[in-house]
Length: 413
Image (cartoon, rainbow, N blue to C red):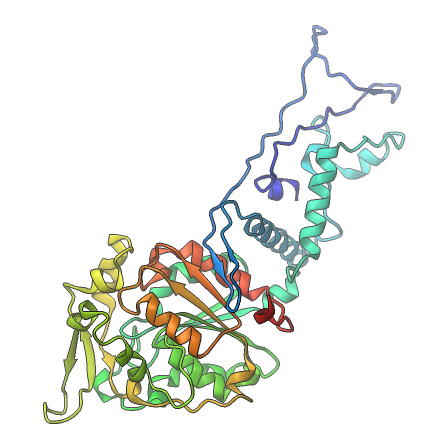
């Protein structure tokens, strides 16, 4: 366990000089070579970790928190490491209690703890550094929701935006799974690997059917954390109204966070004149003829980098260019019917993307002001696709939200 936490310590810790046992069981505090020269104890090297964090903004408050060195993130990662080790011991039936720091083990003979206990009960004094390491590991195990059972109960369901698919979450899915969470990324109808013609999707219920099917089969005694991007925000709002008892929280990532009686098209109409680039990149398809409403929207591949991926690595832009599909038009026109007893009972969080040219930050603020969530997070330097351009920052926010107590009224912070 000591090694697991070594990379999270703020200062290098010095290893203890081990006691060498002579034939008369008298402890020695010095180590010697065969020629009698003193040999210093081996050093224990650890790394300090610092991580930049994006600012966090709370609505109805003038506070903006900007952590240059986010110790909360470091502690969270240490908690995850402790949890995964604990889970490993449980699964293998080897768990009794966490061992003391590796720096307290006898480098000359560490074959068994029983042998150590027979050294005339001569227990080595613990240094302040070892006490800090032990207290840190203990506190990490008791903070928040880091025990194995609670971590295993946290289940993220990721819902892509228009034209995207489950593929777009591959970085987020990897990071969350490595942190011990359950994760499912859904392909909506006619998206990603789901085989269906987007021009034949006319209703929102038809579009979100893979998601409703997933929640319908989900255990009644468990809950998920829904994450919606772009028009995926309207999709998770739709299922929040249908399955409020199966959703513990909803996270809108640069997404359509609508009010009851509003459609995604209504929201898009607000940005008319604000973002001509996005409008130029959209190509309307008329599968039923030009005298009928559009059936889908496509993107001009020559403009998608500038509109959707202006901060995204080139290799991910290439992935998107061959993976994106048409956006069904019908679901965009459907007005949502949301109630305070169902949809309104679920905590909502919003993640703003500052360098977004598809849904500009100004439009995101309009949605936030008109339908205030519990808390608003902000990712600096992110385009419309933070799961590709800023995956670590998005991951940090998702983990932080997953650890927020549902009983906590964040609007008062």
